[in-house]
Amino acid sequence: MKLDRIDIKILSELQKNGRMTYVELAELVNLSATPCLVRVKKLQAEGYIGGYTAMINIGKLGPVLTVFAEITLRNHRRADIARFMSAIQNIEQIIECHVVSGDYDYLVKFVASSIGEYQSLMERLVEMDVGIEKYFSFVVLKSPITKYHMPLTNLFHI
View 1 (tube, rainbow, N blue to C red):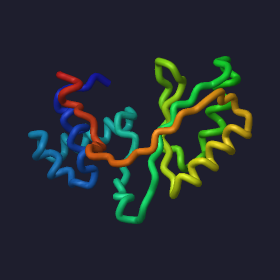
View 2 (view 1 turned 90 degrees about the vertical axis):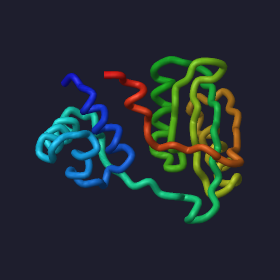
View 3 (view 1 turned 90 degrees about the horizontal axis):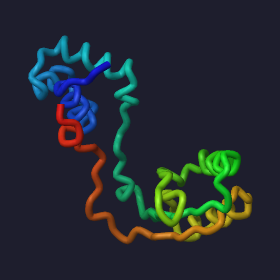
View 4 (view 1 turned 135 degrees about the vertical axis):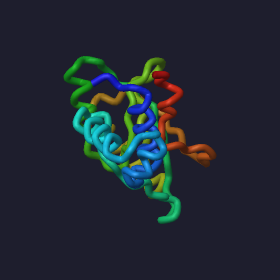
């Protein structure tokens, strides 16, 4: 499927508000409701839309700790990488994991109830012997800018 500027605009608008009606969406992208609905269904079928979710203001629920950890593995064989990924896959406190270039291998984002919980998680990972050579932790003090949507219309000039 080749996307056009209307498809990009539909994706851009849906990521900002996935609960809007097709009539509202159609108005924002200058289509009538039925063609807009057809495009959205096609975008879903082709995998451009992976799902819909609610953005929870976790700070309203209570205090949480966000930590970014730079993790370096001892070895970089496929089996070592697979063992590490398997170990972190189901840890709910890990909400992002990025393979990065530079001095370390992974940038991992944790959310935890306390520094103690985070430290216990890291100690458990190290004790599991999943190939971690070293890690450095960065505790987030404040997040003055947090965006949940990508600048699609700027990234993809169609």
